[in-house]
Amino acid sequence: MLGQIPPTSFDLRFSVAGIPVRVHPVFWATAAFLAWDGSDPPATFLGVLCVFLSILVHELGHAGMTRCFGWDSEIVLGFFGGYATTVRESTARNIAVLIAGPGAGLLLAVGTFVVLRQVEGLSPRTVDALRFLLFINLIWSLVNLLPVLPLDGGQLLREILVWANRQRGQQRAVVLSTIVAGVIAVSGYLFGRRVGLDGTFLAILFGLLAYQNYATWQALRGGGRPPTNMDVPPPPGRRF
Image 1 (cartoon, rainbow, N blue to C red):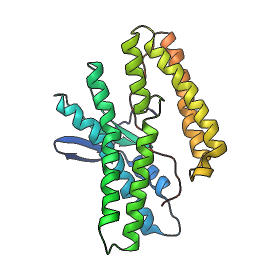
Image 2: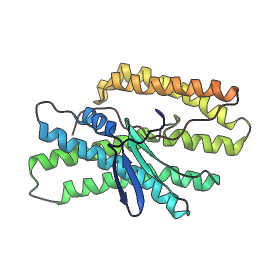
Image 3: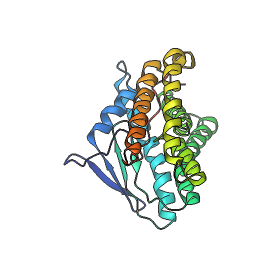
Image 4: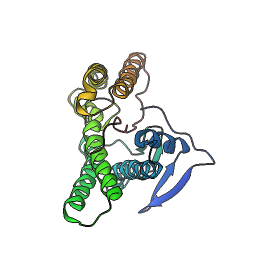
């Protein structure tokens, strides 16, 4: 989580199935960073659209499940990701809301795969865009399930640990998140390129998450509040 995203007069606002969506201008810059292809501007444009669709579908999964339980929800897209507002209630409902985000992304990946396999006559540019869409939704969903706060997997871990021990569960989740994020940061830097990912990006991203969780642990020891949820996009990597 990189902080709340304040509104600006340049925000793009619309709604999907009655769920309000706000897109901060910085989102487009970070999406362009993830999809950048300096030698092919149209490919970069299509990549930005793929990133936008992927994050939006992920957050719609969270927001849609939130609405199913009768709670209001708003989607905000900003710096390297976004979040959907929700209400913390029972452990089972919280877990359902958390799983719905990666679940929606995986469904989009499956749909994209089916189109690639079943639809003939697609242009090479369309095929490249669909492969990129498939790639980022698979990676995105898996990354968000890692047990690192504030990713969905980290929040799932927190829900379980708080359910098991209401007094110590939150601090234990933050400590485990700090350790896992640190390990991923180091491993990503050393081995990321071997699996087609940007090791430096992984190191920076999970290094920041490790630091944030450590700072949160210190705040909790002093009676502070835990951070707000924000989903983080996958590291840049090769396109299929």
